[in-house]
Image (cartoon, rainbow, N blue to C red; front, side, top):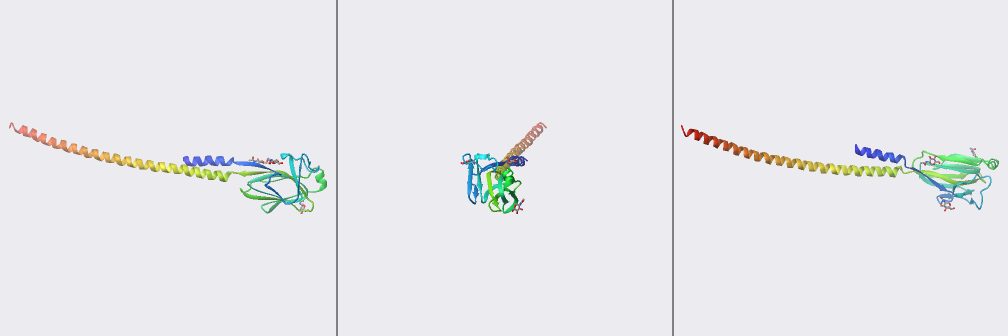
Length: 220
Ligand SMILES: *[C@@H]1O[C@H](CO)[C@@H](O)[C@H](O)[C@H]1NC(C)=O
Ligand SMILES: *[C@@H]1O[C@H](CO)[C@@H](O)[C@H](O)[C@H]1NC(C)=O
Ligand SMILES: *[C@@H]1O[C@H](CO)[C@@H](O)[C@H](O)[C@H]1NC(C)=O
């Protein structure tokens, strides 16, 4: 019962172990397939692009953006002028289209996200699908799940605790049976001694009685 309680405790911890990581456009984990232009405080982003907040920089590109991550979700937003396809693990899940006039009106920003993914290695690919598309990228958040590692730890800890309990159980059983044997042996010895004493007493009784009888007999 104690062991299952510990396992439950670990499962409880596991639930809380989702962690968000923010990846900047300057990160080496973001792979750009074409020419890039980094805009920052000294080289401001084009008017059509929305304001960039994270780490004071954004990257504009005419090519693909690839990002590999192991996790259960990701969240980002892209500025697109033109059209681009967003796919995860080789499967397109959205296309983002913005005409130049829409972009000029500040409507070029699109959210993209996917949650409840299996906790494996994923490849996010952002690819322009029409000539002259510009993609603006600032940051991406992905949610890593430390579940697997932790549940392994849980299993290991559970196993170790179970093992220790087993060893103690065996030791206790061995000690108990030794003690029982000892008590049995002691009792046997004690009863043997008692038997001896009793036998001696009985013999004494007999001889006393014989003496008494003898004594009684004497006067007659
Ligand atoms: C991660 O960030 C997303 C988007 O900001 C948010 O909805 C989600 O709750 C966050 N998850 C965790 C575990 O912090
Ligand atoms: C912010 O950008 C700088 C380079 O411009 C980079 O060295 C740094 O790692 C970035 N910070 C984060 C949190 O990504
Ligand atoms: C976006 O544009 C591409 C190419 O012009 C087109 O194939 C696609 O259907 C468009 N998607 C949306 C959602 O408008």
